[in-house]
Image (tube, rainbow, N blue to C red; front, side, top):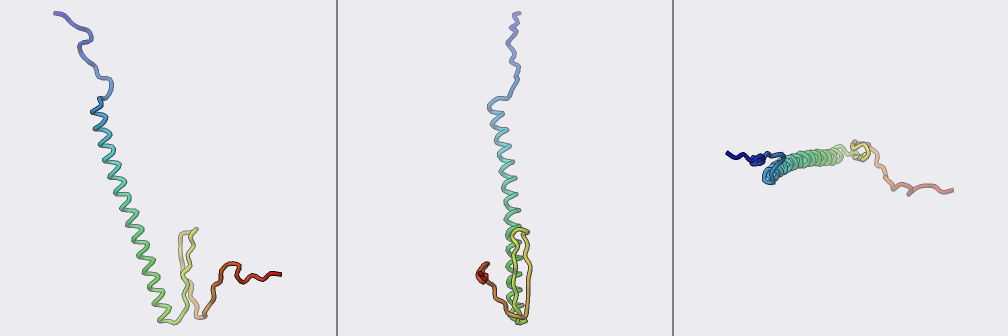
Length: 102
């Protein structure tokens, strides 16, 4: 009997087919994670915009019914807003519009 020393192949790496399957599985998982993450962002944005719209409607109705002047102030740096109300009318001017020059 004749024995060939290199007749059996020893595999030391992955085949091209195995790499393609692994890449397809990773692509599927990443696609599902991105799709689910996008839904969370959309849901949060819709909830926040609906809350702000409700606040504006409520303040509009409150100002009409109570006869008061209401201002909704936005602080974009702090990402917040608040309400200021008064019974006296007030005038808002552009920055520098009424500056006195000497």
